[in-house]
Image (cartoon, rainbow, N blue to C red; front, side, top):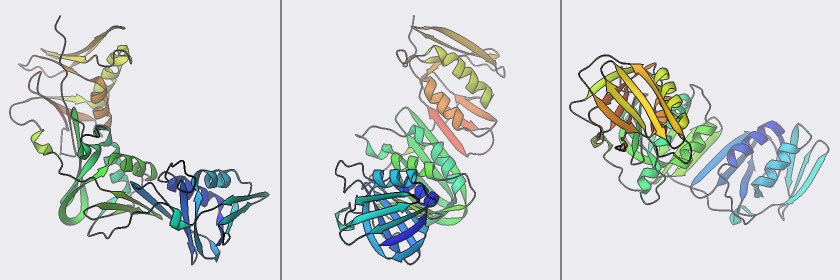
Length: 368
């Protein structure tokens, strides 16, 4: 195998693919697979949970396949002196890399010795814009559970109904729901994607209106865009009936400026340190104001915001981080906060439409 590639393009591809490369202590398994044919160089990395494939156009003098250590290959390409990189892999997988005045010889490995990459036959397909998918991931993954005893909650639930896609994340204390419209109707379906995979995907996706082609089967999903494909195993199991968690019935609704409310909560939370992280912030609704306060071993803070006068009095506590995460994910100037009692969840929704819904469970306040 012998190829000649642009240093910048190859470096970019390695940076993406290495996100999926196994971090095994065995050098041959911590690798990136290179496959050269026609005028293309295909780089792929896998850790048996996720596979990332990037295809580059380059000069292929001799076709072939090999696996090279991801860290070593990445450092060589990044620090080489030239604008182009020549990679030659001999029959015994000895690899010669040249760029400008830089020359390297490293040991490669047979692709048969590398970890088995993820193969599947997709049965279902949808298309969604990069920008939309990236925003949906960013605005839900913070609510994914890290509890390995509940594997279905360690991923985001994707639900497709006709021309709408919904993403749901639950960690037992809060829930995030994002809804987006697709350009065409699709068969109703659902699947669960691991959070780690979605985080990597969101880092690769750029804020563009171009599309991501999503293909999936009962056990795998692939996200394809530009010259890149991200493949993941799906989490098996039945997801929680999340609609039952959404409060229904009598509630009291207040409209707030999203930015203003967020900044007040952030100010009040200044007295919460790592030692007092479980200290809740307190919401006190009374007459025409909402008083927000917090008392910890480090001090006391308080602020307030005017509200529409209502026959409603309530004292309720929340984890400050859960509120901040939810409000930062709200992409509207104003939001609705719905309350019922001190032991029922808070619901945060847009004033118009149903593009998002965030639910936060209250925290018991200490009685003095």
